[in-house]
Length: 300
Image: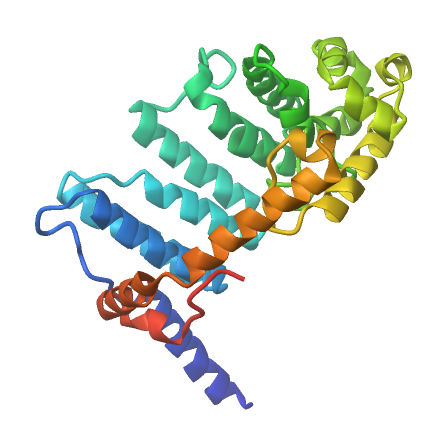
């Protein structure tokens, strides 16, 4: 392909990214309007149309601002798109923009009094994005703040394990970052985490017994989390067939019982896929957003 052809292709791709989308907020809008835009953005994002997703998010926010409509949902998809590009600085800018929408001001992150409503943003966005930008001190504090919110819940250690540790030394996405990464980056041991003993004490004794990870040894050596994690991953691989998990009981209940539950879940999911209304919803969505016609109908 010569230089002229490449230039023309770039113009075409830019034009596609900048193409106008319908303003669904011009008439009366409701929750279905938001769902319609979200389905559109999800299809773009999962099809790898990252730059188009970003441009569409910004267009939708402009529409929403002109019509005093909800726009916070667009920030998630813009974050997802920048994450796929591994543009962590832009992710941070988008997060701070969401912050001004949600809190009506730019927060002082070291002094703000976070509450349980902020858990999701702290554990999935603030902490991980700060890590990926090399801001280990502040990121660790915000991750620890989120984990402390969960620490008064029953079985919190198992539910939070995937935010405390994964066997990934160099995370490349927000979904891979854990508290362990912060401590490693700072040259510290995870056992220095103020909630470490509480975390270990809350782990289910059946899981520790079956994984052959003694609680006293784990309390002293956080490296044993690798063995625990490997056992859980292997056991889930053997027991789960539906692509979903039911938490701790998938590991502690008899294998036959788990297998039967997974079979029923899988049957329900197949029925959803075969929902006769699905085709009609897809047809209506493509009628509103014709560019979706050549994109895959489901994420992959």
